[in-house]
Image (tube, rainbow, N blue to C red; front, side, top):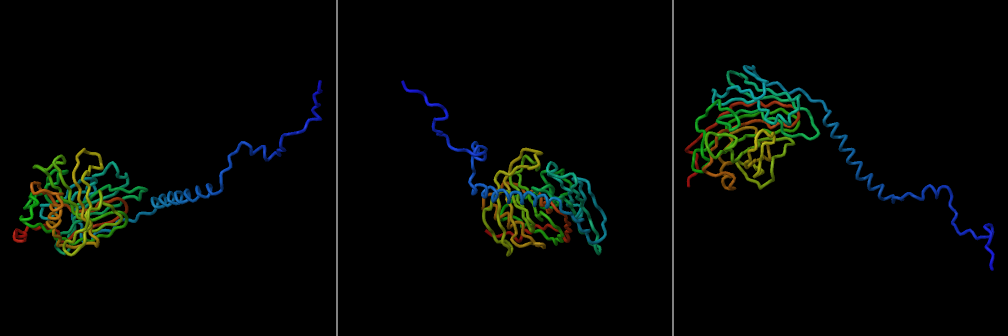
Amino acid sequence: MPEFAHSEDRPDLSPDLDLEDESNAGRIRVPRWIWLACMVLTIPSIVSYWAQWAHQLRGLPDPPRPNGNISAWSASPFSQLPVAHEQCYLSNNRWNSSGSPANLNQETFVVEEAGKESFGWRWSAPWRLFAKIVSYPEVVCGAKPWDIPMGRIDGFPFHPVKDGPRLTAEYHSELKALGTYNLAFSLWAVSRLPATPESVKTEVMIWTAQSGQRPSGKPLGVVTINGVRWEVWVNEHQTDVSGSNSSEWTYVAYIAQTPVTDGPLPISAFLDDALDRKLLSPEMYMTDVELGNEVSEGSGMAQIRGFQLHFDPSAAPQP
């Protein structure tokens, strides 16, 4: 019967393991290229994050003061000051109060210059990581669906038809600002009277100047009006971003490719283009004209001189 070999006589079949091998036995080795890829992908995000914080912490200069002698002013939200022979009013419009920072400062003013009236507004809106529109200080002529009517101007409301009276805006704008904003006309088209938020069908905006602002919706094309190229943007399902109501309407914006600081501005020509694009219909009612700055961040001042609206029946195109 064979004898069992003693332990000291048995061959050692186990591999030699040093301490380093034993400590790394349970680890998964990650290829170096994966570490490099992670670094390449992560560093830009870190840089962007701190750049956004640096943007937010920048100093904000005081807005410029208007020229002339101030005869009336208001810093109260949604206050109304009559202008243009009391046919229009200044609105200290802070419509997006839910997205408005607590330290947003904004005021409207009326100024006397050499015996003539001008008006405007100033603002100071803090820099933010993700800026969005917080206010629209403006002048309103007509019945704005969102406001209690104050002034009335001859010719409103009217149907947007090509063979009707032609609407033109005269103005000279002095805009001194920095940040994210625009200067834009706004008109509301409603399905019935009186004009209410529930009756709104289309909003037509005409951006005469802008800095860093992006319109709602998507680009639809380009049109040339009064010798200026305008990009056309449309959102067929625009809603109230402030959340104050559930209304939905079609938004169309005309964005000037070069600033248009002075009139005359043929507003009816933009309405004609919207009619051709089936964004307006002749049965709708245009109830007002507004001009203001959509403010997202930064500081600035807009002073408007010589503001007038004209309806000219003789200027209507012939069929």
